[in-house]
Each structure stands twice: as structure tokens, then as C-alpha cells.
Length: 259
Image (tube, rainbow, N blue to C red):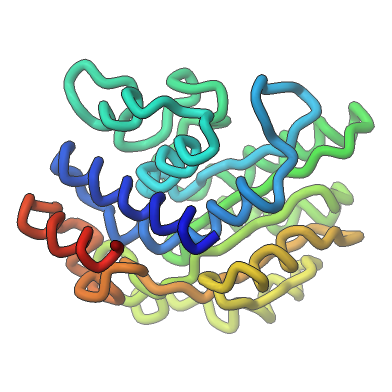
């Protein structure tokens, strides 16, 4: 898993450099989460079938991480991945569900992933299918009202087949999430809404696999304590890497660390 995730992070740096696009810190933050989901937890394979698990990237500004993870599974070609956010390429900066079969939703406006996930989870229940739905959100995104509307609705619908995940790195576009619009105590709040709530180290593969694999009798949320820019020391927990671009010099320095 360590090597898989290093390769995912290398590809994030590579395509960020090629495209001169922002949000590299956000993508590096959730690499361990996505790697564990796709390589250890979810029931998903080629060819895509209806009886699969579903992953929704609600914090779609981290699309580079999803693209790199899909590539690591053979679900996305090298050519398509390297064409990210470029003229003539297929992959936009935020996800578009029509660009690849394994991209479930078009996203970008924060707060939409969890409500959409509830709809998918409800339809699976109606069809009596055992598939599960996983939704990854940001901690800044958790300030959106639509997230809490969905949080109230899921237990009322008996959706024990949905797992929400928060990439809890405490950095959003303009500062510390806890300082801008505080939503603490976050664990207590989700529990009060009727969710099974688990707090883990979001970079620990064993904790991730256990928390994400274990089924519940009610909706579950996994709060992953993470570090923005994880894996590249000079990017870690630095707000500037929400928007700064990866120049050739920065790419070389980051790749040396990841190697």
C-alpha cells in the first residue's frame, strides 16, 4: 500500500506540473484514503457492473487524486490521466461523470456529494442490492447546509449502506477550517444526528481499512485526521498549497522526496 500511494502521489505531482493547476495539497491529503478504498475495501472492477460499490468525490477540487487512483487500478489510461486539465485532454479540473465510467458524479460546487450519495443509497435499498456508497468530503465543505440536511435524512431513511468520509486536514481555501466557520465538536454533532462516528488517522492504512470495511446498522461517518500536502514535506500543513502551482523546480524537489 505504501508503494501504491507513493505512485499515486507522484502522478498527482506530475499532472499538477503539466497542467499548471492548483489544489495539489488537497489531492495529496486524501491519497491514502482513496488508495485504501480502491485497493482494499470497495467491490469494484473492470468491466464496470451494476453490482458494484460507489465512490463519490464530493471535494472534487481533489480530482487529481481520484484520477491518479483510477489509473493505479487500470480504470483510467496513462494518456487520459496525463491530459488532465489541458487543451485536447478529457479530464477537467473538477470531475465530470461523462469523462470516464468510474467517475460517478459531476461535482465541484461543495456540499452536493452527500445528498447525491443518499439518493444512490436509497435506490440500492429499493432494488435490494448489497452495494455500498462511499462519499469523501472536505472539512471546509462540512460548513455547507446541504451536508447537514443530508445528515438528518440518512438515519430517517435507514441508510446503513452509506459511509461518509471527512478529509479532516483543517485547512481550506482561506485559512483554518475551525477558525473560519467552526463546526466543532464534529464527532458529537454527527453522533447526535444518528450516525455511527469513527475518528482515525487518515494516513494509517490499517485504521482506514478497518473503519471503512466494517459495516454498521446505521449510516457511518469516518473522520480522517489528515495533513494537507501529505508526502511532500515542504507542502505539508501549508495553506499556500491550496492554490500554488507546481513548477518544474518544485516537481523535481517533490519527486526526490517521494522516491
